[in-house]
Length: 142
Figure 1 (spheres, helix red, strand yellow):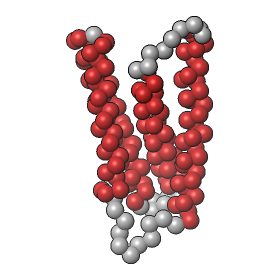
Figure 2: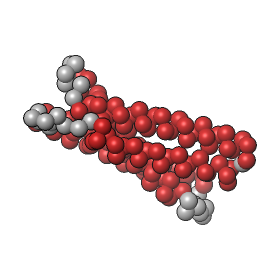
Figure 3: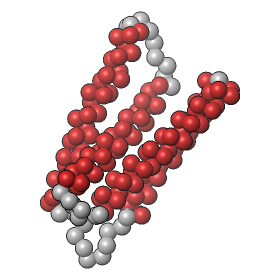
């Protein structure tokens, strides 16, 4: 498994673990205190900052080629796939409430940074999954 596969696996594991813990915390806080206080559970999404550790945890080995043409193509395709999936999902997330609630309804400004964070996490997740799929197609060593 090369460095980029390890980073992709690390990203997927961090997203799944932190999302699960955050959802469980919000559910517990909601049933115990109600919804305004349950928003405090969203602060656990800050642990997504562990993404920044992946280059430190999976450093390039001295004297080895870290990123060849094939890796560059896989990275390009994974970013392209992430954004190709992101835009329809983002559009649907913006438009479906508009169709359901109508144009005269207002949206709380609290929702906007939450949407930004969720879609940023979504982009990293899709890119990591597509990276793993592409490396998985070619065999054990990539």
